[in-house]
Image (cartoon, rainbow, N blue to C red):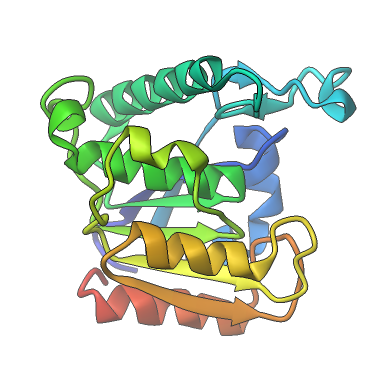
Length: 213
C-alpha cells in the first residue's frame, strides 16, 4: 500500500447527495482504495425537479432556469464559493471527479481556478487539482461567464454510448470545448460510473500517464 493516498473531491449528479454518490460509486471506490481517498460533498441547493421535491436528500449544484439566467448564475456562483471554501478547509486535493451535473460543475470549478478574476478573488488560496475525471457530463451553458479560455488541467472524460439521459456527444463536447488536454473514453453502458476491473485499470492508466501515480 502506498504511503500517500491521492485525495479526490467528488461532485455528485443532479438530485443526488454526497451519501448517495458514495453508495453509487462503491466498486470504483473499493477498487482504488489503496491509491485514492475520495471526499464526497453535497451541493448547496435543494433540487427543484418535480420528481425530487418530496425527497429531502436531493440536491443540485444549480437548478436549470431558462427564463432566469441571472438567478441560475447566482446558484452556480454560490456553488463555486462553497467548493472554494471546502477546498481551502479540507484540501489540498490532487484531483476532482464529477458525475453528470457534477461533471459540469467540476469543469466550471477548474475554469474558475485559472480565471484571473476568480483565482485572485473568490478562489484565492485554493490549490488547483492536478487532474479531473468527468463522467457522463456536459458543457455548461454558463461556462462563458467564468472564462472562454481552455482549462489546462488534464482530464479524462468518460461517456456512455448507451446513455439516454446525457448522450455521449454532450460529453465529447465538454472535452473539446472546455479542455486543452482531455482524453475521451467510451463504455457501452448508460448513465452511471463504470467501476469494474477493466475500468479501474483505465483510471490507473490515465493517472500513470499524467505522472500522478
